[in-house]
Amino acid sequence: MPGRQPHGQPTVYLHIGIAKTGTTYLQELLWHNRKVLERHGVRYPAQLPGDHFRAAVDLRQTPFAGDHATFVPGTWDTVAAAAMGAPDRAVISHETLTRTRVEQVRRAAESFAGADLHLIVTVRDLGRQLPAVWQEQVKNRSAVSYTRFLRAVADRPQTRRHQHFWMAQDILDVLARWSAAVPPERIHVVTVPQPGAESGLLWQRFASVIGVDPGVVDTDVPMSNVSLGVAEAELLRRMNRSLRNRMDWPTYEREIKVGLAKRLAARRDSARLSVPANRRAWVGQCAEEMIAGLRSGGYDVVGNLDELRPVFDERPAVMPSEVRPQRLLRMAGDVVGELVADSAAQRSSGLRGRLAALNPATRLGRLVRRFGRR
Image 1: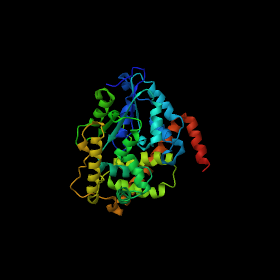
Image 2: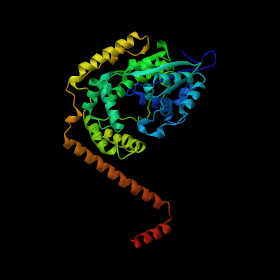
Image 3: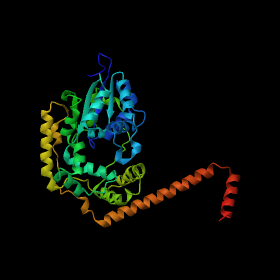
Image 4: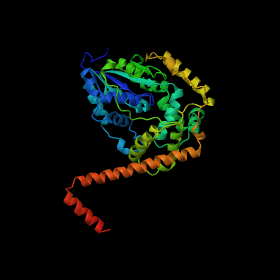
């Protein structure tokens, strides 16, 4: 098992994604179990939950969603230094690291000079990735339809949207960039199990790479990333046409991506989004190219590359464009009603709390004066 090197430097594992491959799940496990992991020789160098995200933004020199508050210079160096100070092993994890350019990869490698640097890449079949990435873009303010998204990714190889998608999702291109710093034998490709697999299998595979017993952690941790159904995602996409120009990113993230999206996910009653029939042959071809490249690349594969072959439901895919307007309107009405009721309850609760903090005489006097002025 890799550990601290003879010259006193640790083994550092960079988990760079890919996005929508269970990264949030793994990061939540690592964060909530960081003290336990430290006792077992694995450091998760973070003081706050978003430290690795801010470090990745700093390394890439690119604010997330155009919000300059996400760019905190020096964060990468701070996290890297904490990893280098680990007694044995350290793990840094964020999926935006797949977007690093070659010169940024070299800077990352320089931060771990002398350490035994390893790369971990979690990868999932494209049949599940495409719908998941579109939905995540919708939760990040996109108003692009699913049909247009698929057309841009598959049919227009020179478009900016196509390049944006593939820079983070083309596993072979991602590994080609990172090979400038990490040799293939220290690149660990962890496949995401297909639906129906043993619960916790992804974590077991990940834990085997970093050399820790998967059973030492508490896997009952809160999940912050939610999945929407076809109708819920389409409702949010249409709302984005107005919302994205009326809110800055921090407000949108708090109120919509976290707040409203979780509310929609909790009441989800529509089908799961999938790849339509006219795109499945292309997706299958892409999968075979991916599998062949990984198999011949000399990487350490943890799992089974066959899991990267999409398994499609025989039933026709339900497209967001097919959701009836009446259903969207009814859903929107329900959500607005819930929001109004919750807002009223919070105001009432706040008033009761303020009144309870006062003694009866003062409370009565203030109420009399208030109503007397009306």
